[in-house]
Image 1: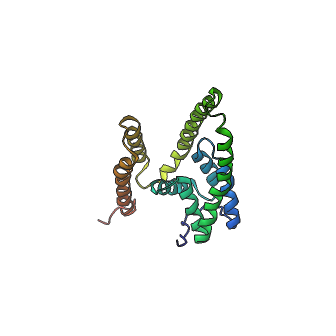
Image 2: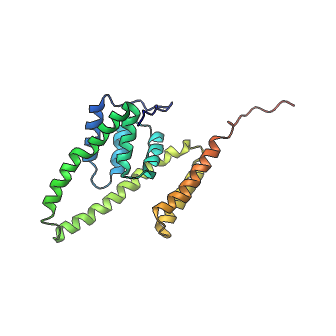
Image 3: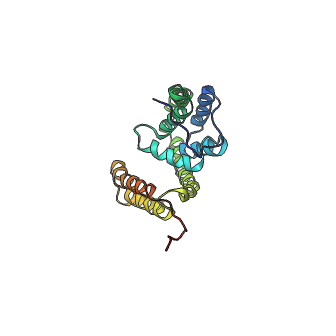
Length: 204
C-alpha cells in the first residue's frame, strides 16, 4: 500500500504520529456504541479536524463501497494517507485491539442475561437511539453536498432515490450501489470534465 498524497484543500489538523493514530482510533472505536457513524464524524471532522466535512463525505463514500466494515476501511485510508502502510496498520490496530477485548468481556457477561425481558428491552431502546444518531449525522453532512460537482439538487435527488430503493422497493445494497452509485460516479466524472464557467462574453 503506497502513501496517498493529501488533497489540496487539506484539513487543518493531522495525526502527529502512528501512536496518535492508534490511540485516536482506539478511543473512537470504544465510543462506537449504537451507531459509529455519528462518532466518526464528530471525532475526525469536529474534534480532531483531520478531515473537512467535504473530505469526510468523499472518503466515507469510498469506504462504503469497499468490502469490510466502513469505519475500518476509513481508518486505514487515513493512516495510509499520512504515514503509508505503517500508518494504516496503526489505525487498524487501534480500531480492533482494545474494542475487541471490551466486546469479548461484554459478550461473556451478557450471555447470562440475554434472555431476560430487561435485556431485550434495553436492546430495543438502543436500536431507536442508533437510528436517530445515523439520521442526525446524515442531516449534518448534507451541507457538504453544496461543493459536489453534480450540484446540491442532483445530490439530494440521488439520496432520495437511494432511500426509496432501499426502504420502499427493498433492493439489495449491491444493486443500489451498482446502479445508483455507478450512475452517480459517471455523472460526477462528466461534470468534472466540463470547462469552468466564465462570465466573459466571446469577442464579436
